[in-house]
Length: 78
Image (cartoon, rainbow, N blue to C red):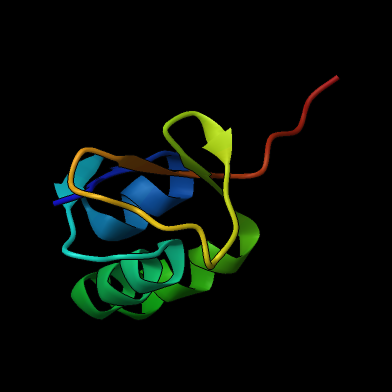
């Protein structure tokens, strides 16, 4: 199963920094994670970037059993 890595507010909303989610695309991964973690997690997801194996990903990016999907919060600073 693909590994899901969560950072910042996404990790806080989910109550974990890592999980596995049976899925075949990024959209599927996020939908299943939202079902698992609930409304607070769902509120955070639209504000995050998604990366698969260190590469920027879109909703239709495929994921396989050996992949890592990372949900990264917006970064600010200066």
